[in-house]
Image 1 (tube, helix red, strand yellow):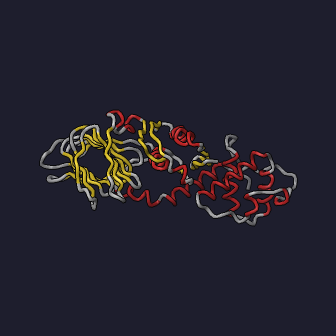
Image 2 (cartoon, rainbow, N blue to C red):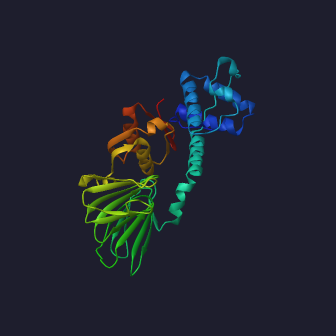
Image 3 (cartoon, helix red, strand yellow):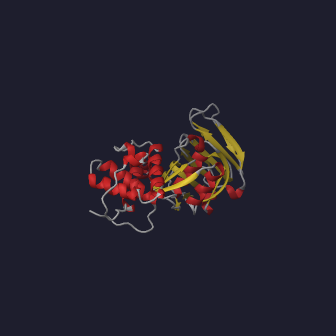
Length: 325
Protein backbone atom coordinates (compact mmCIF):
# COMPACT_ATOMS: atom_id res chain seq x y z
CA UNK A 1 0.00 0.00 0.00
CA UNK A 2 1.52 3.30 -1.08
CA UNK A 3 1.75 6.02 1.52
CA UNK A 4 1.92 9.74 0.81
CA UNK A 5 4.15 12.29 2.49
CA UNK A 6 4.22 16.05 2.71
CA UNK A 7 6.60 17.93 0.44
CA UNK A 8 8.33 19.29 3.53
CA UNK A 9 9.57 15.83 4.55
CA UNK A 10 13.37 15.90 4.51
CA UNK A 11 15.64 13.14 3.11
CA UNK A 12 16.88 12.34 6.62
CA UNK A 13 13.30 11.79 7.83
CA UNK A 14 12.64 9.60 4.81
CA UNK A 15 15.85 7.68 5.52
CA UNK A 16 14.83 7.07 9.13
CA UNK A 17 11.47 5.79 7.96
CA UNK A 18 13.18 3.43 5.52
CA UNK A 19 15.42 2.18 8.30
CA UNK A 20 12.42 1.30 10.47
CA UNK A 21 10.50 -0.34 7.61
CA UNK A 22 13.47 -2.50 6.62
CA UNK A 23 13.81 -3.60 10.23
CA UNK A 24 10.15 -4.59 10.40
CA UNK A 25 9.93 -6.44 7.05
CA UNK A 26 13.48 -7.36 5.95
CA UNK A 27 12.40 -9.97 3.38
CA UNK A 28 9.95 -7.90 1.37
CA UNK A 29 11.43 -7.91 -2.17
CA UNK A 30 9.16 -5.17 -3.45
CA UNK A 31 10.15 -2.96 -0.54
CA UNK A 32 13.83 -3.55 -1.34
CA UNK A 33 13.23 -2.48 -4.92
CA UNK A 34 11.42 0.64 -3.76
CA UNK A 35 14.21 1.38 -1.31
CA UNK A 36 16.82 0.99 -4.08
CA UNK A 37 14.88 3.47 -6.22
CA UNK A 38 14.72 5.96 -3.36
CA UNK A 39 18.40 5.55 -2.52
CA UNK A 40 19.49 6.05 -6.13
CA UNK A 41 17.55 9.26 -6.67
CA UNK A 42 20.43 11.52 -5.64
CA UNK A 43 23.68 11.72 -3.65
CA UNK A 44 21.68 13.60 -1.01
CA UNK A 45 19.58 10.50 -0.39
CA UNK A 46 22.70 8.33 -0.04
CA UNK A 47 24.15 10.77 2.50
CA UNK A 48 20.85 10.86 4.39
CA UNK A 49 20.81 7.05 4.56
CA UNK A 50 24.38 6.89 5.88
CA UNK A 51 23.59 9.55 8.49
CA UNK A 52 20.41 7.74 9.57
CA UNK A 53 22.26 4.47 10.04
CA UNK A 54 25.08 6.14 11.89
CA UNK A 55 22.64 7.96 14.14
CA UNK A 56 20.83 4.76 15.11
CA UNK A 57 24.13 3.02 15.71
CA UNK A 58 25.22 5.84 18.05
CA UNK A 59 22.06 5.68 20.13
CA UNK A 60 22.52 1.97 20.71
CA UNK A 61 20.15 0.35 18.23
CA UNK A 62 21.01 -2.99 16.64
CA UNK A 63 22.16 -3.04 13.00
CA UNK A 64 19.47 -3.68 10.38
CA UNK A 65 19.08 -7.14 8.92
CA UNK A 66 20.42 -5.91 5.57
CA UNK A 67 23.81 -4.83 6.88
CA UNK A 68 25.29 -4.09 3.41
CA UNK A 69 22.74 -1.30 3.00
CA UNK A 70 24.48 0.65 5.76
CA UNK A 71 27.31 1.48 3.36
CA UNK A 72 25.83 0.67 -0.04
CA UNK A 73 28.12 -0.01 -2.99
CA UNK A 74 27.04 -0.20 -6.65
CA UNK A 75 27.04 -3.99 -6.62
CA UNK A 76 25.05 -4.18 -3.41
CA UNK A 77 21.92 -2.57 -4.83
CA UNK A 78 20.16 -4.17 -7.78
CA UNK A 79 18.60 -1.67 -10.18
CA UNK A 80 14.82 -1.91 -9.87
CA UNK A 81 12.37 -2.06 -12.74
CA UNK A 82 11.16 1.31 -13.98
CA UNK A 83 8.32 2.48 -11.77
CA UNK A 84 7.22 5.56 -9.92
CA UNK A 85 9.58 6.00 -6.96
CA UNK A 86 8.03 5.32 -3.58
CA UNK A 87 8.45 8.11 -1.08
CA UNK A 88 8.73 7.50 2.64
CA UNK A 89 6.03 8.69 4.92
CA UNK A 90 7.36 11.17 7.48
CA UNK A 91 4.62 10.37 9.98
CA UNK A 92 5.92 6.79 10.23
CA UNK A 93 9.25 8.12 11.37
CA UNK A 94 7.66 10.50 13.81
CA UNK A 95 5.46 7.83 15.38
CA UNK A 96 8.28 5.32 15.65
CA UNK A 97 10.66 7.84 17.18
CA UNK A 98 7.97 8.91 19.64
CA UNK A 99 7.40 5.28 20.71
CA UNK A 100 11.14 4.78 21.10
CA UNK A 101 11.43 7.89 23.26
CA UNK A 102 8.50 6.85 25.46
CA UNK A 103 9.83 3.34 26.02
CA UNK A 104 13.27 4.57 27.02
CA UNK A 105 11.96 7.40 29.20
CA UNK A 106 9.34 5.37 31.09
CA UNK A 107 11.39 5.34 34.30
CA UNK A 108 11.66 9.14 34.09
CA UNK A 109 7.91 9.48 33.66
CA UNK A 110 6.91 7.59 36.79
CA UNK A 111 7.32 10.57 39.17
CA UNK A 112 4.71 12.48 37.19
CA UNK A 113 2.09 9.81 37.89
CA UNK A 114 2.91 9.84 41.60
CA UNK A 115 3.03 13.63 42.04
CA UNK A 116 0.50 15.97 43.59
CA UNK A 117 1.44 18.64 41.03
CA UNK A 118 3.25 18.29 37.71
CA UNK A 119 3.94 20.16 34.48
CA UNK A 120 4.30 19.02 30.89
CA UNK A 121 7.02 19.91 28.37
CA UNK A 122 7.51 23.72 28.16
CA UNK A 123 4.68 24.27 30.67
CA UNK A 124 5.11 26.54 33.72
CA UNK A 125 2.56 26.36 36.52
CA UNK A 126 2.07 28.42 39.69
CA UNK A 127 0.46 26.74 42.70
CA UNK A 128 -0.83 28.34 45.90
CA UNK A 129 -0.54 25.97 48.85
CA UNK A 130 -2.87 25.72 51.85
CA UNK A 131 -0.53 27.88 53.97
CA UNK A 132 -0.51 30.68 51.33
CA UNK A 133 3.01 29.81 50.17
CA UNK A 134 3.44 29.54 46.40
CA UNK A 135 5.33 27.12 44.23
CA UNK A 136 6.13 27.89 40.61
CA UNK A 137 6.91 24.68 38.75
CA UNK A 138 9.27 24.79 35.79
CA UNK A 139 8.65 22.70 32.68
CA UNK A 140 8.71 18.92 33.03
CA UNK A 141 8.67 19.08 36.83
CA UNK A 142 6.83 17.20 39.57
CA UNK A 143 6.34 17.74 43.28
CA UNK A 144 4.50 16.30 46.27
CA UNK A 145 3.19 18.55 49.04
CA UNK A 146 2.16 17.68 52.59
CA UNK A 147 0.85 20.73 54.47
CA UNK A 148 -0.63 20.00 57.89
CA UNK A 149 -1.37 21.94 61.08
CA UNK A 150 2.06 21.04 62.46
CA UNK A 151 4.39 20.75 59.44
CA UNK A 152 5.05 21.85 55.87
CA UNK A 153 6.93 19.30 53.79
CA UNK A 154 7.44 19.13 50.02
CA UNK A 155 9.36 16.66 47.89
CA UNK A 156 10.67 17.76 44.48
CA UNK A 157 10.49 14.57 42.42
CA UNK A 158 11.74 15.92 39.12
CA UNK A 159 12.75 19.16 37.44
CA UNK A 160 12.82 22.57 39.10
CA UNK A 161 10.68 24.83 41.27
CA UNK A 162 10.73 28.33 42.76
CA UNK A 163 9.31 28.68 46.28
CA UNK A 164 7.94 31.80 47.99
CA UNK A 165 7.33 30.83 51.59
CA UNK A 166 4.69 32.34 53.85
CA UNK A 167 6.32 33.04 57.25
CA UNK A 168 5.33 30.63 60.02
CA UNK A 169 7.99 30.10 62.73
CA UNK A 170 6.01 27.23 64.21
CA UNK A 171 6.03 25.30 60.93
CA UNK A 172 9.39 25.37 59.11
CA UNK A 173 9.01 24.93 55.35
CA UNK A 174 11.06 21.87 54.28
CA UNK A 175 11.83 20.91 50.69
CA UNK A 176 13.68 17.68 49.88
CA UNK A 177 15.27 16.99 46.49
CA UNK A 178 17.28 13.82 45.96
CA UNK A 179 18.34 13.55 49.61
CA UNK A 180 19.13 17.27 49.95
CA UNK A 181 16.93 19.06 52.50
CA UNK A 182 16.25 22.81 52.39
CA UNK A 183 14.63 24.32 55.49
CA UNK A 184 13.14 27.84 55.53
CA UNK A 185 10.71 29.92 57.57
CA UNK A 186 9.90 32.85 55.28
CA UNK A 187 12.01 33.19 52.16
CA UNK A 188 12.22 32.78 48.37
CA UNK A 189 14.45 30.20 46.73
CA UNK A 190 14.85 27.95 43.69
CA UNK A 191 15.60 24.21 43.76
CA UNK A 192 16.71 22.20 40.72
CA UNK A 193 17.01 18.43 40.58
CA UNK A 194 19.12 16.81 37.83
CA UNK A 195 20.22 13.21 37.41
CA UNK A 196 23.33 13.70 39.57
CA UNK A 197 23.09 17.09 41.30
CA UNK A 198 20.78 19.25 43.37
CA UNK A 199 21.10 23.03 43.01
CA UNK A 200 19.66 25.62 45.40
CA UNK A 201 19.56 29.37 44.62
CA UNK A 202 18.51 31.81 47.32
CA UNK A 203 16.73 35.06 46.40
CA UNK A 204 15.50 36.26 49.81
CA UNK A 205 15.77 35.31 53.47
CA UNK A 206 17.85 32.50 54.91
CA UNK A 207 17.77 28.74 54.42
CA UNK A 208 19.51 25.82 56.04
CA UNK A 209 20.81 22.98 53.85
CA UNK A 210 21.61 19.42 54.84
CA UNK A 211 22.20 16.14 53.04
CA UNK A 212 21.71 12.55 54.08
CA UNK A 213 25.05 10.86 54.66
CA UNK A 214 27.16 13.95 53.90
CA UNK A 215 30.30 14.55 55.97
CA UNK A 216 29.24 18.17 56.42
CA UNK A 217 25.70 17.80 57.63
CA UNK A 218 24.40 21.34 57.23
CA UNK A 219 25.17 24.98 56.47
CA UNK A 220 23.30 28.23 55.81
CA UNK A 221 22.76 29.99 52.51
CA UNK A 222 22.38 33.78 52.23
CA UNK A 223 20.62 35.84 49.52
CA UNK A 224 22.62 35.98 46.28
CA UNK A 225 24.24 32.60 46.93
CA UNK A 226 23.76 29.25 45.29
CA UNK A 227 25.02 25.78 46.09
CA UNK A 228 25.47 22.76 43.84
CA UNK A 229 25.40 19.41 45.64
CA UNK A 230 26.89 16.30 44.05
CA UNK A 231 24.56 13.67 45.47
CA UNK A 232 26.95 10.77 44.88
CA UNK A 233 30.01 12.25 46.59
CA UNK A 234 28.24 14.67 48.90
CA UNK A 235 30.48 17.51 47.70
CA UNK A 236 28.92 20.97 47.98
CA UNK A 237 30.08 23.94 45.89
CA UNK A 238 28.82 27.36 46.98
CA UNK A 239 29.00 30.38 44.66
CA UNK A 240 27.54 33.85 44.23
CA UNK A 241 24.73 34.41 41.73
CA UNK A 242 23.21 37.61 40.36
CA UNK A 243 19.61 38.25 41.38
CA UNK A 244 18.36 38.27 37.78
CA UNK A 245 19.91 34.85 37.18
CA UNK A 246 18.08 33.16 40.06
CA UNK A 247 15.31 31.00 38.57
CA UNK A 248 16.00 32.63 35.19
CA UNK A 249 13.69 30.03 33.61
CA UNK A 250 10.77 32.14 34.89
CA UNK A 251 11.66 34.75 32.25
CA UNK A 252 12.32 32.22 29.48
CA UNK A 253 16.10 32.02 29.93
CA UNK A 254 18.38 29.25 31.08
CA UNK A 255 21.43 30.45 33.02
CA UNK A 256 24.28 27.96 33.48
CA UNK A 257 27.70 28.45 35.01
CA UNK A 258 30.57 26.05 34.32
CA UNK A 259 28.13 23.23 33.53
CA UNK A 260 28.65 20.27 31.20
CA UNK A 261 26.85 20.26 27.86
CA UNK A 262 25.27 16.97 28.92
CA UNK A 263 23.71 18.54 32.02
CA UNK A 264 22.47 21.55 30.03
CA UNK A 265 20.87 19.23 27.45
CA UNK A 266 19.13 17.49 30.34
CA UNK A 267 17.58 20.84 31.32
CA UNK A 268 16.70 21.86 27.77
CA UNK A 269 14.99 18.49 27.32
CA UNK A 270 12.22 19.69 29.64
CA UNK A 271 11.40 22.45 27.15
CA UNK A 272 11.83 20.48 23.93
CA UNK A 273 8.99 18.36 22.49
CA UNK A 274 11.50 16.02 20.83
CA UNK A 275 13.73 13.44 22.47
CA UNK A 276 17.26 14.90 22.55
CA UNK A 277 20.18 12.44 22.45
CA UNK A 278 23.89 13.26 22.82
CA UNK A 279 25.79 9.97 22.27
CA UNK A 280 29.27 11.56 22.14
CA UNK A 281 30.70 11.49 25.68
CA UNK A 282 33.44 13.95 24.71
CA UNK A 283 30.88 16.48 23.44
CA UNK A 284 28.67 15.95 26.50
CA UNK A 285 31.65 16.56 28.82
CA UNK A 286 32.50 20.02 27.42
CA UNK A 287 31.80 22.81 29.93
CA UNK A 288 29.84 26.00 29.21
CA UNK A 289 28.73 29.21 30.89
CA UNK A 290 25.98 31.35 29.43
CA UNK A 291 22.33 32.18 28.85
CA UNK A 292 20.13 30.12 26.52
CA UNK A 293 16.68 30.82 25.07
CA UNK A 294 14.11 28.39 26.47
CA UNK A 295 11.45 29.68 24.07
CA UNK A 296 13.46 28.34 21.11
CA UNK A 297 15.07 25.10 22.35
CA UNK A 298 16.47 24.15 18.91
CA UNK A 299 18.29 27.48 18.75
CA UNK A 300 19.53 26.90 22.31
CA UNK A 301 20.87 23.48 21.35
CA UNK A 302 22.75 24.95 18.39
CA UNK A 303 24.21 27.73 20.52
CA UNK A 304 25.27 25.10 23.03
CA UNK A 305 27.20 22.72 20.75
CA UNK A 306 28.31 24.71 17.71
CA UNK A 307 31.18 26.51 19.52
CA UNK A 308 32.69 23.05 20.04
CA UNK A 309 32.14 21.86 16.47
CA UNK A 310 28.95 19.97 17.26
CA UNK A 311 25.80 19.89 15.15
CA UNK A 312 22.10 19.41 15.85
CA UNK A 313 20.58 16.77 13.58
CA UNK A 314 16.81 16.89 13.18
CA UNK A 315 16.06 13.23 12.61
CA UNK A 316 12.31 13.72 12.91
CA UNK A 317 9.90 16.05 14.71
CA UNK A 318 10.40 13.76 17.72
CA UNK A 319 14.14 13.17 17.69
CA UNK A 320 17.29 15.33 17.80
CA UNK A 321 20.84 14.00 17.86
CA UNK A 322 23.80 16.14 18.88
CA UNK A 323 27.08 14.97 17.39
CA UNK A 324 30.37 16.07 15.85
CA UNK A 325 29.48 14.73 12.37
